Image (cartoon, rainbow, N blue to C red; front, side, top):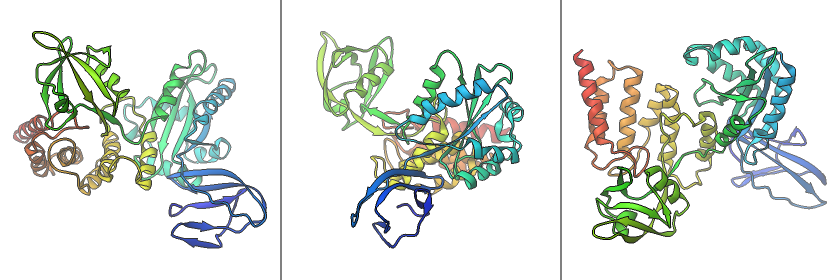
Length: 422
């Protein structure tokens, strides 16, 4: 059991008869029970059990992120009812999320915060929602009342005839308090809801296919350079080789190559190369490696990734090392321009040094966060960190085959020096 978890049987919280490092023991009368384990901000667990006389039932508790639905704001009650039903049938039925309809209880919390439909529409129109209300205080009220991983509030865009709605999503503490917004259609096409459901399927961190090579797009995919010891080197690829096919599928773009390679991870596949004087075939075995969130990807729904990350950090049983999880955690704060928590997280990360993904990216992001927090105050510290990143030959951004970090760090140093002169 995670520390701080509450345990209920049919809605009644009970004290265990014994506790050990392995968990907690409860003594109950025979019967059927709904067992609920809640860890506010982290997730929840639900399971029904039947307990016979003198029977022992072992439950392995694995938390799932909890999504608290706060209801629909707006006077068009027909559209509100249809949207609530659609959300419950789509997002609410996702197998790895726990949907909790708190729309009745949430009304008082929203009223106390002054969040009605008109106010939410006004806030949606602001250029920066960070400068609007005290989101941390509002989110604190939600955490105190519901203790979910994510809070979802729908706001109709019209009170008379609403065909669309804005979905507001808050992360639980200690993640960024400013909400994310997604617009969805209420009638007609389900494409926007399908996009939302797809966003809820995001992992705690992205994964990338690793070739161990740099490619150039020039009407076809050209091998630019080869990393020693990687899959491309093992396959005998060389700079200048032009990739025509992989596993029998033609490829003409780098995205196409990577997308096709995802289906071939950890399997040996043929790769057809345009070489002189005749094409040749090679065999390659690509790998998939955990990576880092992009700071500019608009498709990422940050509260969802934050909820996944919170559980991944608590479980520590995935294929990503702790430092990489922490770096993704810092990325969520950087995306929200929450520089102070990002700086604290980045300073505590001890990542591997050398080529590929590691400490150079930590240094680069730490320098960027310091510049975001106070360019004048931290200019010299940022310069030193950018220089450390520049000096680590072969270091990459985001993943093992990502962009080289050194030229970017050099460009940031040059920009920093220009700004100081001005």
